[in-house]
Amino acid sequence: MEKEKSEKKLGIALVGLGKYSAGQLAPALQETQHCYLAGIVTGSALKASEWKARHHLPDTNIYDYTTFDSIAGNKDIDIVYVVLPNSMHAEYVIRAAKAGKHVICEKPMALTVEDCDRMITACKEAGKMLSIGYRLHFEPHTRELIEYGRSKRFGEWNLIRAENGMGSTEGWRLNKEMAGGGPLMDVGIYCVQGTRYITGLEPISVTAQEGPKKSPERFKNIEESLSWQFEFPNGIIAQCKSSYADEYNLLRAEGSSGWVELSPAYAYNGIKGKTSEINLSLPEVNQQAKQMDDFAIAIKSNRPTPVPGEMGRQDVKLLQAIYQAMKTGEKIMIG
Image (tube, rainbow, N blue to C red):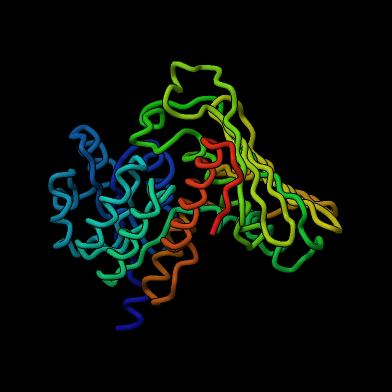
């Protein structure tokens, strides 16, 4: 029985069939070894029909948002992957847990720390695992940077630069109620994560500044760009910025005896790295396939996921501290 359990592929249902599900997760599920696309949840009848035909899904594994809770009785589906606008994450993670399913939730985990706590509690009470979609933890260049930090390969870090910007955005990301904010809640979270995994530490304070708005009408209620500065223990400073007006993609750490840099650092593919000693030449992987396979293995072997809800909660706490610093112009201490 144990061998059968370890060899069984776990079924994943994608909740929300936007660009990320269609362009990244569904293709990745064609490459996974330990899980597969078993079902979908969508409010679009057209998408339901298209996905059913393309992925050979049975009618019994296709849900909309009103029938979602009946997924509880579907033995084909072991994992629910929530790929909805940020404001909907908490509701569907909690409903998935109550339906008896393990859950992956896209980042940011939620809009508030309180919602994160509710999500973590719901999964624990249901005896189900919760993982956040931090795909870069399974990417070779990123893993190498994390190891450099742990081993002190380039001495003690003193300065981190984390920058992630894209030239434009559209749709629900411009809606503060759905997104929770501007680029910080979308591409900026990669910088928050990057500073944490490259140092292995948590920031103790933050200052932040909103950038000028090139398109004030489009960005009435959210920032178009911002920069912030984390202070970490041991005097490490992280200079970060994020934007919907300009494009950049960098993670760099400078230490007492050298430096390391990824650029692009957060892309789905084509990540490149170098250090003060060498150019990094590491294999390219399907990050999403590695991420989902690792979660399936964690479930089957009953071990923790390396990217749990608690990690997502900490990022949300930091995102809110950055916004508080931006709004007040004050240095915010992070407990």
